[in-house]
Length: 232
Image 1 (cartoon, helix red, strand yellow):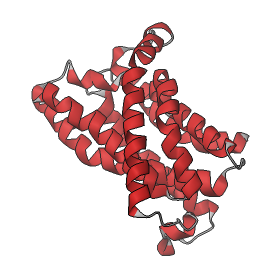
Image 2 (cartoon, one colour):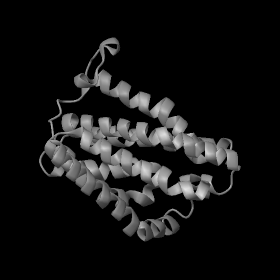
Image 3 (cartoon, helix red, strand yellow):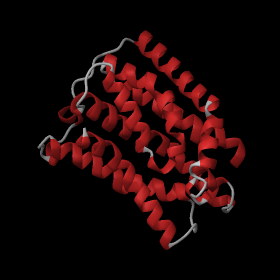
Image 4 (cartoon, helix red, strand yellow):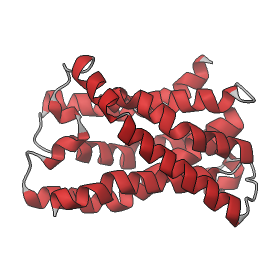
């Protein structure tokens, strides 16, 4: 179980450590979300992919996803569309309903964190050109990062390396995945309830693409679509 927790939490500890070090050394010169994006792209994602390949004892020159993830079952279009649509609506509803809970936790348990650590801070105190550039960067990032997370957390850890089986496997996966977001722990309850259905169906149907579709759309809506009117 300890090794499993390390596999889940280390990818979250990397960007959190970089954010803390950056803030202590440089301050809020650039938005935290930009530091986070660069860390994820150039450090965290390469690390977890290296980890997956090395644990399989595969040669990097011959690496393919099929060698890391177990074969995925085919889900017909009708059930796939229904499950992904309902899971997306559920997740969006959870983020709306539990928003006061997240804000309460942020104000009571994490009040000591500088405002800079809240990624939405980039919308407030930075030049307009920089804010718009970050927003444009978030469009591809909202696709790439969720895909990488789903391949690692659902395709690899949940299906191939989990120490628990049955119903407990998606429960543990959902909880540890929520806690992996160390940079926004006040959102743990929201993420737990929001992501559990799609994690459960991804595990039940053994199809990581269910999780990818929901996760990508959720990030695009939350980080891109809903902020468009604020920025432009």
